[in-house]
Length: 405
Image (cartoon, rainbow, N blue to C red):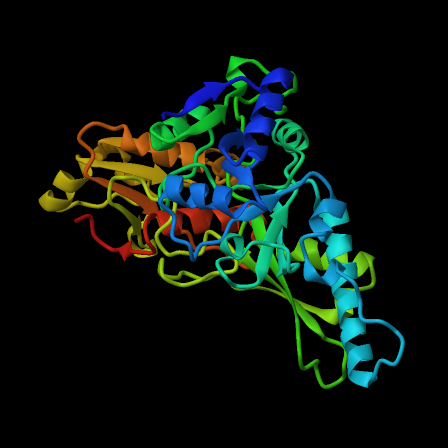
C-alpha cells in the first residue's frame, strides 16, 4: 500500500472519519503542523502510527479532541471523586487536591482550547498504555484548524496524532512534506489544495499550518507533599515551547483564583531516544534535516566583516545557512544558499516558516552542511521566540560550533 492524497471536502472527510474508526491512518493539517492520526483508544491503530513513523515506543502521542468536555474525560482528575461517607482526613485531603486539579484543567481548557496548547495530566484508567509510553500521563489538545476539527467530528472518536513525518525528521507543514516522508505507508493525506469545504488558509498567507511549530506542552502534576504553608499543592511545567507562554498560563490561573496553588515554570529537556517521556518533542535530535546541521556560536555572529580561512570558505561554499534576524548575514556571500527566517527577527514569521525552510535546505544540490545561529534570548522573550530557538537547537542536535568545519 502507498499513501494517497484526498481533498478536504465534507464527503471526503466523512470517508476519512470512517477510515479512522476502522483502525487506519489519516494525515491532516492542524494550525501547528500536519498530524498522523489514528483512533486514540484503539491500541492496534496506535501501533500503526509508531510503525509508520519508525517512532520509539518511549515517545508518547498527543490526543486531539474538539472540546473541553472530551478532553476532561481522558484525565484521572475528572473521574469519580472519593465518596464523602466515612472518609478520613487523608481521603478528604486527596479529594481537595483532585478537585483543584480538575478546576485547573477545566480553566485551562476553557481558555486555551481550541488552540496550540497541549495539556499533560494523569490519565484515566481507560487510556491505552501504548499511547502514554507507559508513564500514566496522557497529553491532549484541541486544534483550532477547521479541517482538523471537521475530521475529528467525522471520526466520532478522539484522534491520536504526532507530526506526520519519519521520527526525528523535520515536521511537515504541507501535504507534500507528508508524502515525501510517508509516501510508502498506508495513509490518506488530507490536502486542502485539492478542494475544501472550509477555509483552510485563514490568514491568506499560503500557510496551511498557520502557527508553523508544534503546540506548547504543559504538564500538570499534583504533589503528594504540599508546601509547608499548605498553599502550593501542584506544579505546571512547560515541557515544549510553542505559541502559548508560561506567563499566559499563570494569568489564566489568576483569573480563576488558582494561581496560589501552582508553581508554573519552564523545564525544557534534551533527552536520548531511549528515555520514556510524558510528552513528545524532548529528544535532543529532533526536527533534523537529512544534511548535517550545526549551530554557529555567538562568538562567530559578529556583524563586522572578517577574513575567513580558506578551509572555512571551502566549507561555506558547500553549505546552506538558515538565519534568524541577520545573525549570520555577513557569511551570506560565501554560502551555497542562504535564507533568513525573519530579517527583522519577527518570531511569528520565523515560526511559520522554520520547518519549511529546514526542508528547503535538503533540496539544495551539493549541500554538505546546514548552519543555523545559536540564539541567545533575553528574559521576557515571547513564546514563539523560545519555540524557534528550540526547533533550531534540536535540528542541530544542540551541537554548537565556533568554526565552519
